[in-house]
Length: 110
Image (spheres, rainbow, N blue to C red):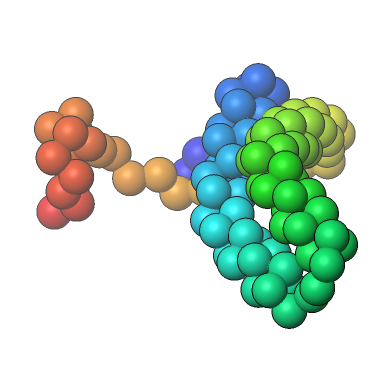
């Protein structure tokens, strides 16, 4: 057994920023489709404004997701470190050894 006694805050923050950025890239096309459908359902200048605002939001959304993922990851890692140090040392995990060739080839240990 191994125990995760602390987390490197910057590595968690960067990883979470990338995870949330990737999630936003999946959500942006869905959001744009909904915005275009809404623009076609509307009429007049408001429909065009709404569609334009949706495009701007779709561009800003991945950046905001990454920023909030970074900040949330950093905050969660910092809180985990405080809790793990104060109450029992952290999460206990069983880790299986992995050979370098298995990591490169993507195979499972026998």
